[in-house]
Image (cartoon, rainbow, N blue to C red; front, top):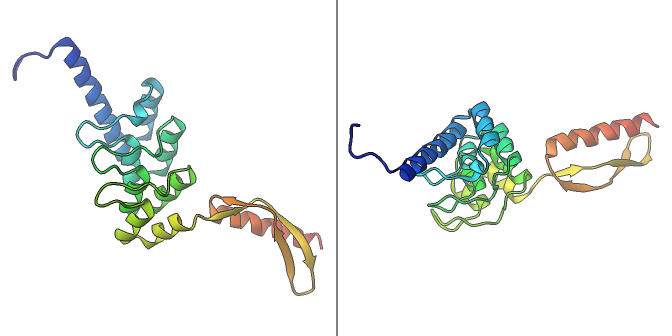
Length: 193
């Protein structure tokens, strides 16, 4: 052996586990979905393990680089959406907001990330406040005013030049998808005239 004394059997196993977790977090940062999925399926609890040096988990890495499919995969496999990193106490939503990753921030918000948790650094800020400090007004707006989705539209009254509809039920969700659904339902109502 080169480089010094051999590690004790327990230390060697811990080192291998640490290296495996570190590589897992790096794979998430690089967006390597297939190997991340294999590790999620074969190593229980790895989703929330922290990188030994950086103190972040895979969800933080995926949020930093805006990888929405990977964010969803990690959440599906039990990643704690509100886990804070070891140094700044930032959640993945803080990370996405700071790095200008709007799609990631919206995906985390829609999955139930805490909007009002404050990180410790650079100062106690919520994800929305951090987006504002980072100069990300679109993310700040998305976290301030969560979009609404339409569950249904009912025809109330129609005249020759106007269509009056009633919004049946409104809930948080993806506004563009549900606005399109509302438009489709309104078109159906028009055809019934």
